[in-house]
Length: 284
Image (cartoon, rainbow, N blue to C red; front, side, top):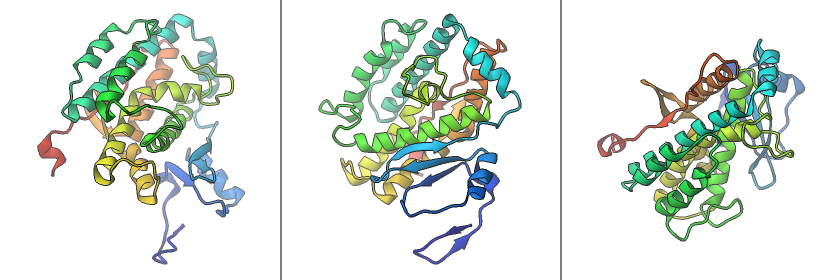
């Protein structure tokens, strides 16, 4: 049941239809029974700090009957396998960045070329070289992508936090532990694997931030409407193979393919591609 204090309207939403609950206000109260019900249905519960920025989440750790076997597969993954999966991850990130640039009428060929240069484990750091090309073309030569940097870094941070939660939810749903990464290894990071798998999907957040900036100008202000807009990243269209589907569903397919690679049942990760809209479609 959801109460809207502005309209006085009360709505009931089946828990099966809920993917995320974002708790922003410090005075929100809830019962243990509600939290248990949400977790039983693999709903990611995201908590925000006093600045209304996502800082943590609760995830279901009993959402797959093959969980024990998949945890073991994660722990047993060889370095060559992890390096190969990271290579695939960075290739798709560069391709999605190129797609966004082209959607904006800018040259993405250099990033496509970079994607072909990525080798196992990305030893030459094509990801960073790609970023040095991507951000100036996307947001101008004065922009610096920094966590506490100038606008629109705050919007990017918020969108990436939502995306990270979505990836972590998909990982647990596939019986995987979001801590055991293939590249990210910070001992203080509880979501290393989520940070790995989300990389190709970052341009989806960038797309929404660009849309917001076009409407309201360069800003770091996270107003209610802006946050609602950025939450829409999980419903954005993405394409895997010939199928187009919302990002939230695509994430589950990606994490399932990751599990299959760990178990030796597949060799390729199924990452979604950013759907490029032509002018006629985007104006409709």
